[in-house]
Length: 422
Image 1: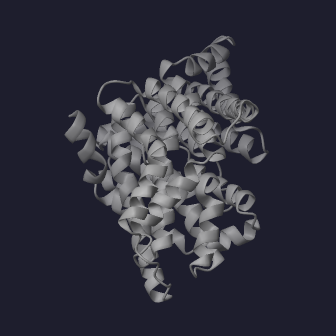
Image 2 (image 1 turned 90 degrees about the horizontal axis):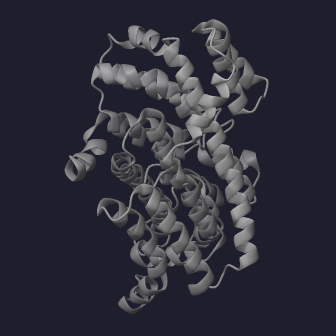
Image 3 (image 1 turned 180 degrees about the vertical axis):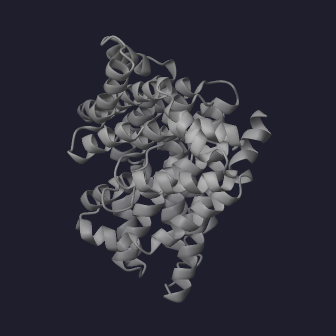
C-alpha cells in the first residue's frame, strides 16, 4: 500500500496530468504485481467511460456554459434583490440566493462566479460593502452549486460508489441549504456590525415584474428536479432537456446567443467533458486495481474498529487535505474506493457520507494553494490571486461551521431521500 501511495504522490508532485498519475500506479499493480495482461489497462479505462449515466454530464455542462454566457444570471439577481434586498445584509443575501439558484440550474462549482460574480461584486460595493468582502463572499458561496442538485460532482460520486443519483441529489439539497444558511447568518451579522445601509423594500409591482422577467430562467430547475422526481425524466433525460431549454431561452427568448456563440460554447463544453471522462476512466481503473490488490481491506482493518464519528473525522481530514491540491472529481476517484467499504462496515449512511465528502471538496475549491475557484475569481473578477486569498480567509469560518453541522447531524442529508424515495 505504501509503495502504491508513494508512486501516486510522486506522479502528482512532478506535475504529471492527473489521469496519467492515476494510470501509472494502476499499471504497476495490474501488470507487474498481479501479472495481468497489458490490454487490461485500456479495456478498464474504456469500460469506466462507457456508462449510460455519464451521458448526463455533457448536457449539464453545456447548460451551465450557456447560462454563464447569457442573460439568465442578471435576471436571477434582479429577482433575488426584490425578495431579500431590503433586509440587513440584503445585497449579500441577494448574492447568496442568486448563487444558490444558479447552482440549482448548473451543477457546476464555479458557475456562480462566472454567471453573477462581476455584477454582484459591483452591486455589493455600491451598497457599502468593501471589495474584499464582496470577492470573498461570491468566491465562497458559489460552491453551494456542488451540493444543490443537479450536482456534477454527485454524478461522479454515484458512478464511483454505485449509488443512486436521484437519492444523492436529494441528500445534497439538505446539505446545500445548511451551507447557504450559514452564509446568510454570517452576512447578516457582518451587515449589522458594519452598519451597511438598508435598501427600500421592492413594491409588489416591482416584485411581479421581476418574477415575470426571470420566469423563463426559473423554469430550468423545475424541469430538472420536477422531471426527475415526478418520474417523467431519468437524470440523463433531464440533463438533455435542461440543455435544450437553456439554448432555446438564450437564443430565442432573450436573444443573447447566436449560432457562432453556441458553437464556441459547444467547443468549450467538449473540452470540459473530455477531461471529466478521461479522469473517470482512469479513476475507475485505479479503483479496480486497488480492489484486486485488497487495499480497501487494509483501510478497513485500520479503521474498522473506530466509531462512525471518528471515521467521519478521518474522512474530513483526508478530503480537506487532498481537496487543497487536486480537483473534486480526482479526489473522489482516488479516495472513495478506499473509504467506501469501511463506511459500509461501520454502518455510516451512504447519503450522509456523500454530503460530508462533497462539502469538504466544496471547501477545497476555494482553499489555498490550488483551490480552483481562487483562480476563477482572479480571472473573472479581475483581481490579483493574493487579493482573493486574503478575501477568502474570513469566510473559512462559515465553511467549517457548515461542515461541522453537516457531519454531526446525519438527518440533514438523509431525511429528504428517506421521505421521497424510501
